[in-house]
Amino acid sequence: MSRASSSAAASAEDVQLRRRLPLWRLLLRDRFALAASLWLLLLVLCLAFGPELLGKAATALDLRGRNGPPGSLEKGWLGVLGTDALGRSMLARLVVASRNTLLVAASAVAISLLVGGALGMLAGYAGGRLSNLIMRTVDVLQSFPSLLTAVVVLYVLEPRVANLVLVLAVTRLPVYVRVARAEVLEIRERLFVQASLALGAGRGHVLRRHIAPVVLPTLLTILTVEFAVVMLAESSLSFLGIGIQPPEITWGLMVAQGRNHLSVAWWLAFFPGLAIMLAAMSANVLSSWLRTVSDPAQRWRLEAPRAQSPEPQVSGT
Amino acid sequence: MMRFLGRRALHSAVALFALITLVFFLVRLTGDPASLYLPIDASIAQREAFSERHGFNRPVLEQFGGFLSDVLRGEFGTSIRKERPALDVVLRAFPTTLSLAVITMTLAVVLGVAVGSVAAYRPGGVFDRLATLSSLGGASAPDFWVAITGILLFAVALGWLPTSGTGDWRHWIMPVGVLLLRPFGLLVQVVRGAMLNALASAYVKTARAKGVGEGTVVFVHALRNSGLAVVTVAGDQMVGIVNGAVIVETVFGWPGVGKLMIDAVMQRDFALVQATILITASAIFALNILIDVCYVLLDPRIRRG
Image (cartoon, rainbow over all chains, first blue to last red; front, side):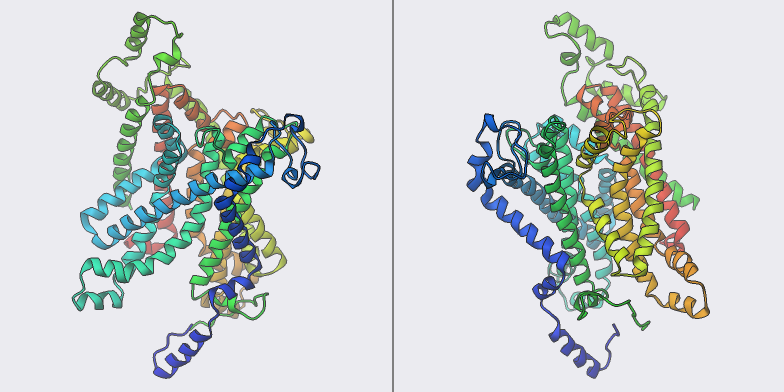
């Protein structure tokens, strides 16, 4: 990773850049990351079409087939994961619940990213009083016991989906603000920003065109980790009975409901929990892959011809 | 150093004030305790007597003023449900949660650092893959699910461990085990990343060239540089547990602060909610200052910043 100074070295680097593999080829080479993205893709399909396709099967009662054990195809492929205490298909319920679970997490994360990223960039770029005000507010926000905040707020505001999203978004805001601010503080001293300012560009223009594009990839990497965190938080709240309320379902709520039948039907609580874990794991795998790809000093690990990467022998230069 | 501590303490005090103000008004929005503690057919006179006794009939701002001056004198009011001083109730539950947090984090740091550094020593090896996979699982598992699966397996099916409550050492295994998962997973990932960078650096090469033993290279030269990252993650997770290991305490019937808080909110026990939050928040602020002191001690560059 030598810094090219002469034009010859620069052109050599150009050739190397052109030979860089496209992102999807890199993804195909990493088995874990590939599996994670395929799983997430499947979940997205479930949330998009699941409730319409399987909505009926998820609510159809079958009082004779209560607490049917998983692994048997007697009741068709919908019964493969067993049936719940009212004889409803677990598989269908899992698919239907994916919409609430994933959409709540996704929208909370998106709101945190937009608001937190904007506030952080503002704090980093404006400095002074405004920055102080934003950062102190974030300090207070961060010192809040997040789960308890959620409990109190949801208790006051009624546990509706919109409130749940709002609470989750606000409690996770500090992460984005801090990261965005730290990045901006560093970037605004760089030559290309200074050059743009010297050429007479306005501050808003610089923030939009030069700073935001650099900060965004970092924030997106955080977003994938945060997605897992927020999904786990929503599941915990729903498990405690203050998140999504029945008859709406999420995976966390399904675990809570299954807990009452634990000794007779372990699968009621087991499969929803497994679904949460697999989704969170996939998000984590994808995020660490993204981090490696976007880090020039680490990317070689993925581009190296062998799947088994050799001992790192980075030269000191 | 003293100036740094003073400034941090001042910031914490301001944040603490904002926090208790917010909590004071928020809990009062959850509803009237009288309708929860008196029978449904209680007369208006009875309700008024109840409000009178607990001071809920005064204007809210007056209540707030009284609350603030009480707190400054070390008075936190009386818990409605337990009919004992709120501070008493909190201080009884706090050590339980704190010991849970300390034991969990000690184990997590020791295990996480050991596994992370050994994994980074041979990246891509069998141990590394196992460590990465288990850390990933630990960081992604929903704790309430692990807790009830654990109860099902170890308490119901195998009968090795008690399902809930406190008592001898066997009561600690499952709560600590469940709480351990996330900090352990995150620490392994962080330590492994930091060690990979450190082991590839020039100063490690120099140390090896000088003939320093491998053990010293890994655990002294390289590991010291991952200290900052370990403190960040461990501190953050410790704060999370002190904050109330609500889930674990609820599932395992553990009489700690987290369970106390949830119950107090649900039962509209205002004085108890305020006392719990004030005490835990103070503990968390103290912990945060301690973390910052660790940073300064570990990295001299921060002292100037």
